[in-house]
Length: 286
Length: 321
Image (cartoon, rainbow over all chains, first blue to last red; front, top):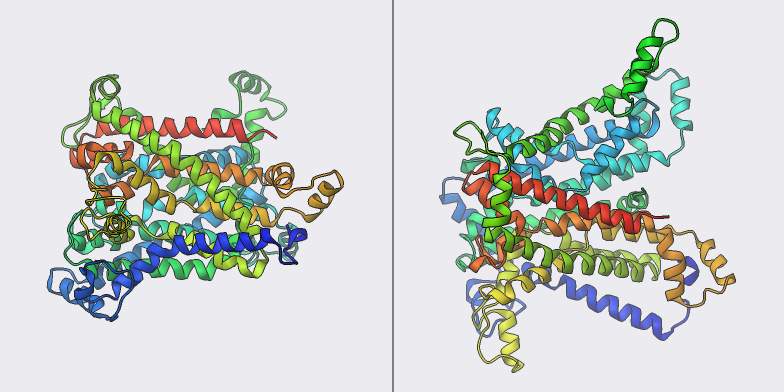
């Protein structure tokens, strides 16, 4: 593509920028609207005719969020705490477990290597949602209901993480590994000192994906918990809204939703450079 | 698992030869022992993968042939769950129709849109790319749950709904239209919101793949008479990013067949006259509100095969070199 840089001002180039900018802003509109709604005072929320932007921005919705739920049985901060524990566990555990699996699959030669790799790639091709029922039975029978383990364990062995890291590791040179082995490092040491730092872009990428899906997913909390104290953010937000079509607490709901979306945006901005580096090796071949 | 590689004939032969030279089985065992460190590294992943993916797949298939309500022990009932699904369960058939209608539109449209946008972005200088990537990618990392506050307001059925307000002002409508309750508009609304959220992992893969197409391919192309941009796109760019295209397609199939979140948040569960009822919604209904696990497992197994079949089809179309 580099040969095609738009050096002079041509109609095609102007049109391209116009189109991308217009379409890009159009895609952002709902997000801007959410941010704006979170700042609207009650008087503006139900104004007629409806207004897109806020006139008198206020933080009252955020205060309400803490107060309303503060008087109920479980404070809102508890849901945030739960979400952080569960998401943190899934991301940290998933990264280590996937990296450990990716290392031999990419750099060792042992029996069943391609069989194991192909089996896990096949798992990329279906949604883990279809396994929800047996997973639920396993969790409930093992007495893990209403624990953080129930919401973390089933999501630790993510095919996506293993796949991205293996593909990324394959294109890195073996020389560094050999050098470390000649120096007498054990495989375990090679893994932590050489492989993990080399894998950094792939780790950031998988961390982003696993963070987004764990942070946004209401199912684990919906299925594996029965008590309020163990609910995570996405489910708690459903509770605040009181179900479909209920308009009460629109402002508070927008504030909660806004708080929920901010971390995902931040994580993407932080990891984006590494992500594109990794995704270049994400291709599938038959 | 382990019998995949060695055929029974070879195994038999190995047993005979075992006395002198190490047979295939023995050789394999030696290889495995030599590489035991590799397996230690794989162990945590494989263990969790076996418990939470392989065992559940097997359990799903077994349960789908039984009546199981969690309290009593499962009762074997043969194929009657499947028979019930296809013959008597009108709502399931409706859900299949809705899911396919949805998948056939959002799948290809979202996929092509993601590729075209990634291609357009790759045409502009590096330093401006991030802003556009951010614009298109952000919607997909917001959760359906969180965004419902915006979409519910946008599509609200009274005059205060943003879309209704605009359409009335423009004179297109005379009175508010019930976008989220009307059977005809439910699927289109879900499709619009899903498309908005569809620039996900595949989009990033395309973007990265397109950035790494070697520049000399284009030079070689221009010598061979590739003149226009669309020619470059068709003859050089697309073939070079085929592996990414395949990966993106697989991701798209998975997400478009399991749509449920958006539908549940926008039109409720169950939706008016089941107009937004997808296969996933049906599964969820039977599994976690009615606790008919056998029946729900049959749905899961069908969905599983549907995804697998679609992916095989995609491999056949895109996977050829």
